[in-house]
Image (cartoon, rainbow, N blue to C red; front, side, top):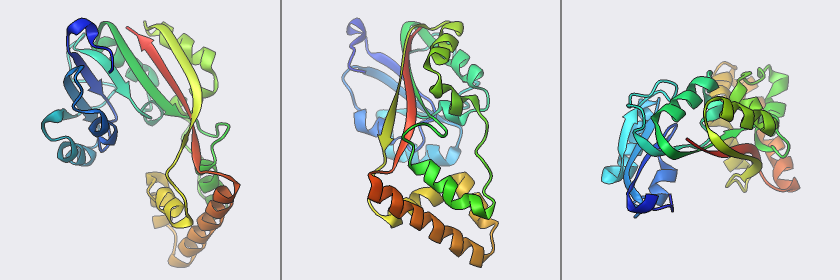
Length: 232
């Protein structure tokens, strides 16, 4: 967004914007002419609208079938959105379609079981003895392990000059209570816990707290992430 687009304001689209914390931190920006924040959850969009006010337009939309004409945006962003869709190809095709020629796409995805992931791995290990199922087998949760394959997929979708890398995101978690709040805030975990009887639920929460202590004693709660930037 620091690029001034040759003196013309940038038309920015963010999908999977969630509660718009990221957008709220960068807006208003001198280089941005318009900012459209999308999410498939109307509840999240209500929070986003309240947070952004008139700094952006919030739209309920599925990133695999966007309600915008082709070439409508100069920048496309999706923070941790690629791992949330069942059809990654459709998401990438739509990103390519709505970008103007020369536009840039920037996206990231969580890597399931990726090197350095201490947060999601700990939650899974804590709950597995209680019958917690493995995570979904979505391409967006696996592809970040193979960066050449990720770059090849982007090129196959028509993107140019893709740059992809792996990194880690350290979560702002510094005590067991915060870790438990993070874990139980994940929809699959919340759904699983709601199906346990009270005694088993208490045992499961205790197991999460014990794992949290081990994670924090060893360093930090973090997730493994792949990110990329590519040109239309």
